[in-house]
Length: 230
Image 1: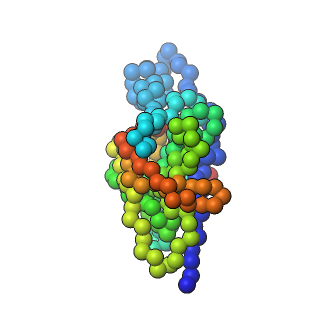
Image 2: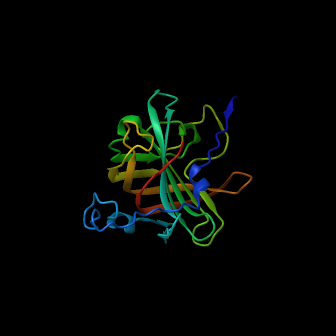
Image 3: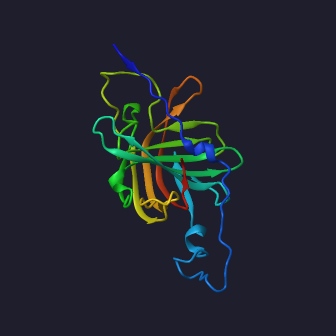
């Protein structure tokens, strides 16, 4: 019987130290009350990423490099339907170590200019190359060294029934920005939403799944000024 082993690493962990660039105020052209102005502070200062994990409250710190999201211009392709999608990673961190959470969206190409909607949180590695889904990774939160992922990391027989989805990520608001490559695709500038997951699986590195599970509730995020992964 064939088995499959899918491993998955977030690109968000490669960007733990991100310098946030702010625009200097120009008295002649800058209006802090105008949302279109380059020095408008309202959106940036209201960034957040928070949740309850196993009933304990956690939130990222609004410090340089701790709140950001990444979008890749390189399309993935749904291995079952052929639908193209983009990877968008949402990251919230706290502390000097990579303590925090990463959510990855597989945003269908036709949703890139309007990502509002609900995306299931997968709990099965065989859905990793599926459009319109999400996965959640939590690492070393609340002073622990535990790591949890919404994707089951072990090998599974091909004929094993798919694990049911673990939760949802809902995009409730967004803003578009300019394409860094000067093309016609408008990239996401701000993304806001909610998330929850009834079951995320614990890892015992390097031996894989350890059988422990936790839950996430009351998750919320509002992130701005995406990195643009080449």
